[in-house]
Length: 264
Image (cartoon, rainbow, N blue to C red; front, side, top):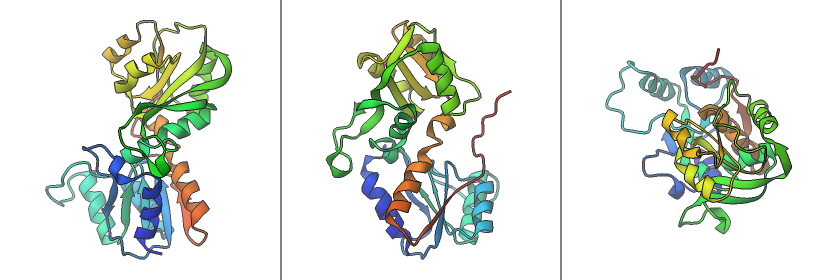
């Protein structure tokens, strides 16, 4: 099986045309024509992930975050990006990333967050003008409803457990009960006003800055669960896609913790 057989399958679900202009989704290192036997799935490319792939005999690494978002000026081993690229080339490893193109499809990053919380009647929070695969609406974030109302503080505790958060940073619990929930994987502060406009009781995302929390104004509960925590289940989306469609291709989850953030 060739790299392009795998990437074509992924891009049928999450077309590269949906990625943001700053992004670098797609094949980062390697050749579309390279023969591959198995893939290792991770959130990020790190030196430890590369070592795991080499030890396990994998020749393709599929991640959510691209190793490089901007140009690389040199390949001297002075930074982890350069060291990773050198090691990948030396060991003939193919590196592929499905990033904001996977953020922008209903069954992608935010969709998997919604799955974990059991959201129903889902809609795209911020639709794009262009459609996703099979004519589905594309865009960032998901807003939907819980099957039934939940006590707000209890729901925050459930969110913390479901996503394995070291901590959940949130605004004042201005609502006793919640049902309408908005989610966005990664750094989603830019969708806060959209979540309020769509009537969400709570908005769950990552990477809120101090001043971002003031946007709540007691109209909504804003909950920051962490960037990595909100995107960690993206690997499941790729795993399920490949296992369903490729019976003769091995796929394995990385066991390496790539989250650079720790909590006391």
